[in-house]
Image (cartoon, rainbow, N blue to C red):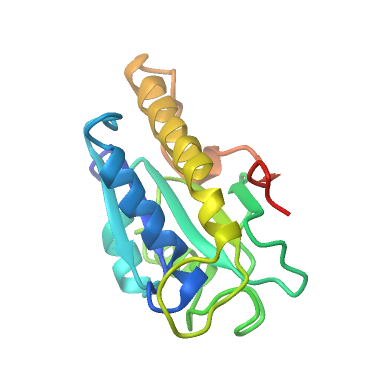
Length: 194
C-alpha cells in the first residue's frame, strides 16, 4: 500500500441553494488567497456535490482530508462554525434524512463505505457552518458569508500544521489514518454575528 501524502480540502455543496454553497465559496476563497498565502505542496482544493464516489476519489491517498459543508440544524445560529476531528475508533453519525444536510447520502455514509473498501480518508477534519437559507438562488446570507474569512484562516492553519508535522521526520506524525486523531470539537461564531 502506498503511503498517504498531501492534503485534500473538499468543499461540499450546491452554489445554487444559497447557504448550501458555503463549501464551494470556501474553496473559491482559498483559491483566491493562494497567491498571497500559498498552501503546502500536495494540497488539493476540490469541489464536490457530496457524491460518495467523488468524495472517495478526491481523498484517496491523502494524509489529511478537510471537508467543509453547510449544515441546517433545527435551531440554527447562522454563521456558527463547528470543527471536528474524528477520535480513535469513532465514526461520524449519519443525520436523519434531510435534517442536517441537503445531500442524499451524507459524509458519514461516504466515510463508512470508503473504510469498508479500504479507501477511507487519512486524518479527517470536518468543518460545518450553520446556514439559514437553502432555497433556490445564488449567494450566501450575510451571517454565513461573515464566517468565511476566519474559516479560511483556520483551514490554512490546519493544512500548514499537518505539513509541518510531516516534515519534522519519522515519528513526528505517527501513522496516517483517522484512528490517530484525537477528539477536537470546536464551535465559534464570526465576530459581530448576531
